[in-house]
Length: 271
Image (cartoon, rainbow, N blue to C red):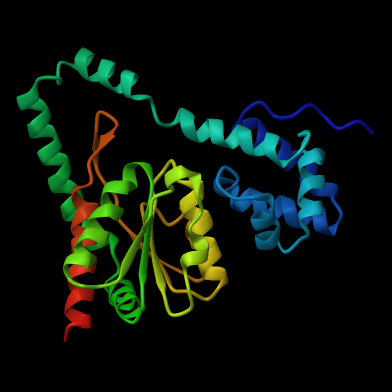
């Protein structure tokens, strides 16, 4: 029987998922059940990662994509990547919206961003679990080398952490993706990783975190939600949410969490 046409949006995907799930063989049903609960990960994970999580072979996951009407996994993933991108307007659209709202004057923007930063900082103490923070500091303090990765919007946080560690004479390495080169093989046993990523999540950051966790290297993730794709087995998450204004998000709370980590680790190592 010929496969149906591929779903054209995420809603159609979930409808198709419900339609096909009733009469599937065991392995295909495992794929369906996992994707129904974790469709947020499709945009950011490889087919091998999804298959491992669903406890099936990659070939089974590929076959399930075809049952859903896609030619392969990359076509299905493209649908979800486009959905994620659609949720974040481009900068031109954001600026246009600000001008139309009359909130574009420098003094008005300053007041709005100060207020957004204040709310973000107030939320920080509730979003970060104190026990997780203590565990993160303990793990990172024992590391021979602290590797730090954060790309795009997370890059200022990553570079600040490495700067702070250097000033405190703590060995640290920034993974910045220069030249599109992977530096994952520089991570050794006894090291640790701080991985920073927010929606729309960096695939390279998630991949490095996954690689390190798979090697039993401690990974501390600074991210925004409990459904972030970096919430992987072996990864200790520290969640921080930034209040936005006009779809622009500052890094007020994130940098406060970063300096807390840096100073706590420095105090622990120099005790």
